[in-house]
Length: 449
Ligand SMILES: N=C(N)NCCC[C@H](NC(=O)CCC(=O)O)C(=O)O
Image (cartoon, rainbow, N blue to C red; front, side, top):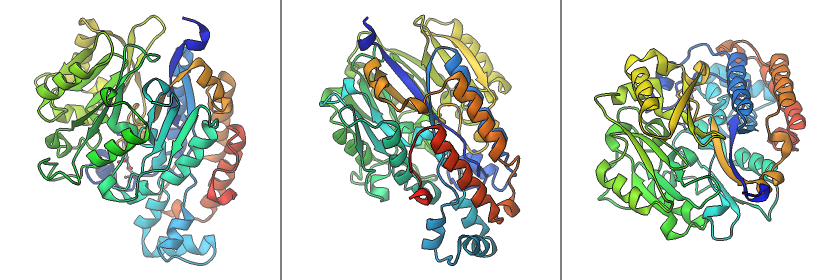
């Protein structure tokens, strides 16, 4: 394979922002609700994320960095009627509605699996890489993300002959879109054409499709179809599968909490999809490559609750240089004996997954974000990789710089009284202004414009 045709999957991890906090904002996400109002540790959270990024880089994988958003979202607070100077806005919100203040301080953009859906050039009719930012309209705090996400994506993938950026879908539950967390791509290798699998939780138009009854379905079929159209994916390279509504009701708020795909492997729980046997047959038949491996985990080995608490399926599955695959799992998987036993069994069974590496991502996990939530995958050819903003890629020097940046600007812990302190806004905006220079992003934030 020549250098120019070689392809890679690049993982762009969300750098945890300086205002990471636990506000209990995500109904349907059990960890978020369980940790509502716990004291957060933003510095530790950011450092934990950086350790994962550096480890991936050290393993020879391509690793990128996705900058945090500016928080508090002062304009959102103003739209909600808190007025005056920035300090007055914060003081008023802190007094009247600490929960709204926490919401506008949320660092939820760290979960970049929800930032956008990405289709590589091998799958698109115009042979460009397509991005659609997710509207994330199911949760107020997340609905604040798409505009800045688009600004960031354009600053990272800034070449219109190579990359296409679509505006997020209309801000309406009808088109509820949660990005790559409900999308995976199956292919013989990252450079070959793939089958794009879109997983939805409910339909806004088709009343025959029954969604969950307790917790919300965040992704609609109509959103998935619109993204597939925008990305110009040929009919034979796209498939739409319904997530099992019963597992959404048990806390599986995104498909990436119950299934993960990488190259020619789909690793999923037995109850991930509605009418699973049919769903897997459809996927097998639609697969455009030579050989697809489906590793299906039975309920008797790992229950849905084990999956939700350990985040086994929110592991990253990555292809290593020798052709084998590694599971990049959260440490919570070791603590659950059923899950730990299953991993051990899987590594020795006949499938391409040969190794596992565990990471301590507890700060993010406590808000329902595991290894796979923290990254946006972008499959790129060598040539396309050359067009990416190189300052957003991890290197030994960048790791040192970013650690120093976190140490300098982040607080160790955040409580309600920190959030009520207008000084936190100044600290955060100062930190982000400096970060845009480290990552050569330009003026991506509202406060810089
Ligand atoms: N599965 C993927 N890909 N992403 C996980 C996102 C977690 C995020 N948690 C939160 O937004 C909690 C914020 C709080 O409660 O403070 C969410 O529910 O949208």
